Image (cartoon, rainbow, N blue to C red; front, side, top):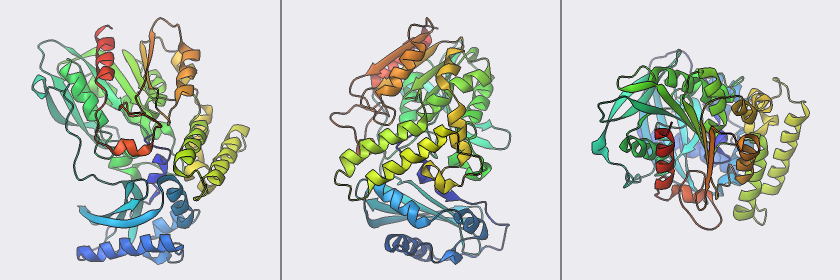
Length: 445
């Protein structure tokens, strides 16, 4: 989870309508539409004109209020300031416009997907594409490996992938990288930073192959049923497919396939291992040992103290709502039919029911494979309480190694002082010691 608002970023993306004759329009027409929708959200009138949306998106919006989502967004990223620029792309018969929008704490992009009839078929708040990206880390030597494009066959979908393959005459171990929550790309890009690229290139330099792929929610969110989605469909099942296919790659030792899960991917790593049945080990980077809904409460409390200390945006009240919704989950009163507006972050009830029933620490205890658990001590998203949970569940087991890093945050970037979301948007690389610790651990198995 890149931030406590990661799930909120994918607000809505309804299934597109049937193919129609494409109507093209000048870019400024789409830009005007995005500007008008943002203005309506700011003015509190966004729910008054539903005719701009497709029937599918209107149906998805029927149980939600754009105005409520806008209020939640500003509580998390600060006050709306202005639109700074627009980006355009064509996706088949659809036109996508991204309005890069400045809030007081960070930039986001409102991503609107227009269908051929000029109706809005998709609506998301996503990370704003940066103007420049962080250079590759000094510890990555690109002459020591070859990177090639692949596709992961996940049954109903093909996910673009990259394989960083060491130049070696012998079989090499391979690590599959599994994302945190949100619509992540191949590099798990956040702002100008590419932590999965850093990890892949760092390990490949050390003689370890790395397979990373675009997450399903980034590539084709409509491949998921947003009414019944769980963390397994979002993050787990495609990792199993990737690990299986990785074992058949030329030059890879099929007996030494590892999964490295970051954040939500770390939470799911024990279950990925259980269902894979043949992994050589798992690596958890900032993976939570407890319930995600409890973590989100602590995230809100942390952000309220540093971003809304005077409660100007009502963060205390929003935090109390999260507590009440978490209590609903714990009590067993949450049902599959509970509407999204009554759940945490407007996420399907199925998502939270899965988390309630899933015990990742116990699942990990039942595994008989090497496990490496790494934690940043400045991580406010998956904090040290979660690391202590892993220590209590797995501490002292011969195949488990654990380490925490003073000064590192949730992305395993170095920082000082009170951790803030803004630091993710400063150009940084994954800490070299993390790369070396993972490498030495794998080479020792």
